Image (cartoon, rainbow, N blue to C red; front, side, top):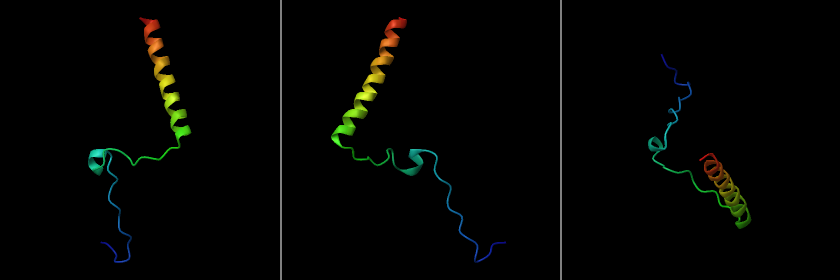
Length: 57
């Protein structure tokens, strides 16, 4: 039995982007300096990974 004063139950949160209808989250704007800092960090990790692969080969 439900009461007229009972709070509504929110729908379950979708677990996948396909269920939400959005494939990507909204972009967060970055200053040029922050973009360069983050991109250099990512490229350094990629370079280190490739170097390890080549050393192991």
